Image (cartoon, rainbow, N blue to C red; front, side, top):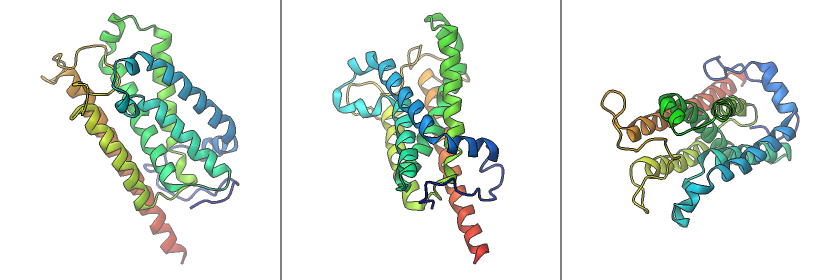
Length: 232
């Protein structure tokens, strides 16, 4: 686990675990503070974007509403902690899960409901911004293996939070009667593809991306342990 503010060496992880080229990883780590600032700006924008949904959601459930802004905030805090010499594995794992899940879920839903988004009047520029900025979240998440080796307990913390978030978003809303996921441009019970409802389509993506984040995090951990054993 990296405790230095220097750029850590890149472990020889397989490409399917660490697909971002080393030069891009190095570039991002050198610009850690500017990237922290960009993520904080994205967090502020995200909370503004969710302002209407906050108004319609019971206050106690607010932590489950702004998923993407919370993910960028977690990333900013995780990288800042590393730069200050105090990398926190649980925080890095939360940032990893959040940016993988939401970084993929948003483009997925934008494509799955593209016709509906056009009908409600989302501007093409906003559509493109949301699509590309969320894909960038995935890229930055895949650089976090350079600052943490994702211990099992930290992955467990991340899985617990995002597992609860998944349940509350799509299966058991707890309060308010409606799930707390990002608003879709169509009613949740609207029939969509393969006889699935809109809520089912959105929930299937969220579930798949949560499992993907878990797979990647545990794979990084397994490879880190394997490399450590080889060095002994």
